[in-house]
Length: 136
Image (cartoon, one colour):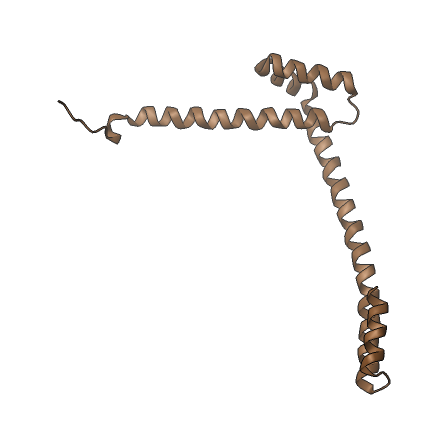
């Protein structure tokens, strides 16, 4: 009985290179496919039937569908991405401002209460009640 062990030397370097290249292209293809689908459904100017048509085209004939989509609508993909990023940034800035405004008022009131307590104008019980009102 012949017990041979398969070693890495049985897989030539060129085969390893081609395997890595094919894997890289496969991952690249899926990234491109997801990017196209994301753009189809993120575009607000494209209505329902247009989205359905492009989706069917990309699913039925994936290579042709993706490449035709990139040729026809590819130039607008970056513009839509930039608009979406600006909209997200604006919403984030508004959220930060609203959170800072809300927190800033509480912080000032709590600081004043701490000063009054430190100076002896408020007892510990009065301080606890006033703090509960501010934080409520």
